[in-house]
Image (cartoon, rainbow, N blue to C red; front, side, top):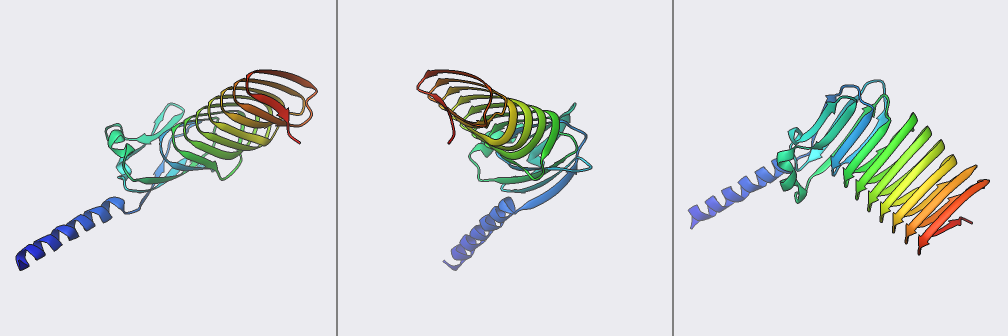
Length: 236
């Protein structure tokens, strides 16, 4: 009986040590080649910050750092889980926090459920933001031309300024950009998504489905088209 108890305790201790090793928080810093586009696939917490040298700091638990891939393809930086680990990781309890330092950033493409935020204002002549899935983006921008694409159930919150912007929403996602000052705004919603935007000179707003558009500013030129139960109205 005593031998069985000792064996049982040894097994429990071994399992505890293995679990502690698997879920222990680990951190790694990596140098990166120059990039202008970031492509993110998976479920990460990503913080973007401007700096003098491209680099990434990864803090992870529940997953090996080697299974988190950061690789360049031309001017695009890919961040993802290693392919042969992806299926098993979908139902696995892991957390990955990423601090990504960039010099010049022109495009973010995120698929999955990553949460992306900016520590500093992203400055770019042209900037493109594309989200698919249930991911989130919250950040400040200073651009001349902005292109936003949201598909799925994700959420986007943008502040700052741009001269002209084009926003496309398909699905049930929401865009909160009323604090992004814009001269020319074009927005199209198909599905049940909602948006709040700003326009000071021209607003081209189109809705098909049950989505709603709310706008601030006093654009002299207004082009509105709504089909379905969606609506386009100025905020009070």
